[in-house]
Length: 388
Image 1 (cartoon, rainbow, N blue to C red):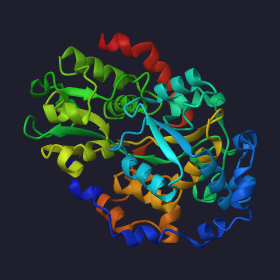
Image 2 (image 1 turned 90 degrees about the vertical axis):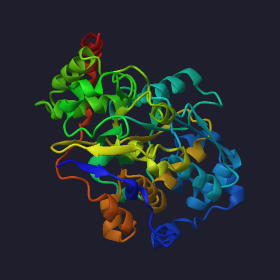
Image 3 (image 1 turned 90 degrees about the horizontal axis):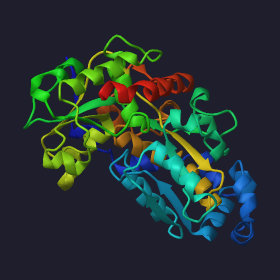
Image 4 (image 1 turned 180 degrees about the horizontal axis):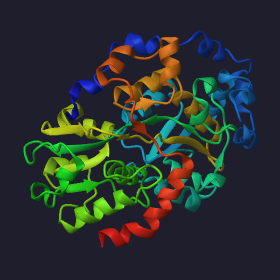
């Protein structure tokens, strides 16, 4: 039997549960010793090298320094992706003196790196990134370490020991399909059939975008491969292309609604958001299937641009991301947050939402940094050849 995610996977529990995520520790952190005046006078160069809120005298000082900057640049964060629309709105409501500019919302991890490199020290450079592991691993020199106050709640193997990067959330690779146009697939092999001719899309180029690469990883583990051997996944997509079933259209909510992309392999939280859960903009016929067998997850990473034009605001953003409030917003979108285990232990998780989406599957595979790097090499050398 395959499992299907429905609208209920994104229904949030009462807001009181989110408020319950404010711990005594976070309240204490907000009573930092620095005054607003002293914090706002912190030199930009000092803010750019701060590795914790203590460098600002505590959270109060960090907030004041970020308010003085008054701006934050984020990149490749579509509003429907992992609840980022609500997350961005929540940050601006909580810190009304800071205006967020959201750049290239439909871009890839590679686009994030390209923007950092091209913008340099300019005012439009991304301050923070939400980036795939393989692309991050190849560009660590672009980022700078910072440890959020809830650092201890992030599992050891979910973060760099020095704070250069840290996982934020993962979804599960899934198949979204328009139930008015195609039948529900029960296996990946079904997609090779004539019913799916000219209908299957992935989220871009796997050599550039982590989500597209993860579709190949799913095909690998579902086709006799593994995290150490993704070649069967590349071979599967070669067969899909040869059958005339793989199309090159970049799927979006608009292409789903228009019928251009009736089948999309992507993160579960994105497929769910494009269906009935998307409200008036969603497609009520759009369903989400997580195939039986081995599941693929891939935590995205938070990191701060070492040349961030708004270094204090960048650090405040990370503090916000790793608050129970935002970790629960990830969960409400069907994305498992990095601090889930700690939140369950502390009683700050939105338990109703967790119950509705279920615990992370026991057979969840995530590529390690080394495996992702090796997989990237396989994709670089073989993807274009496989799909012609």
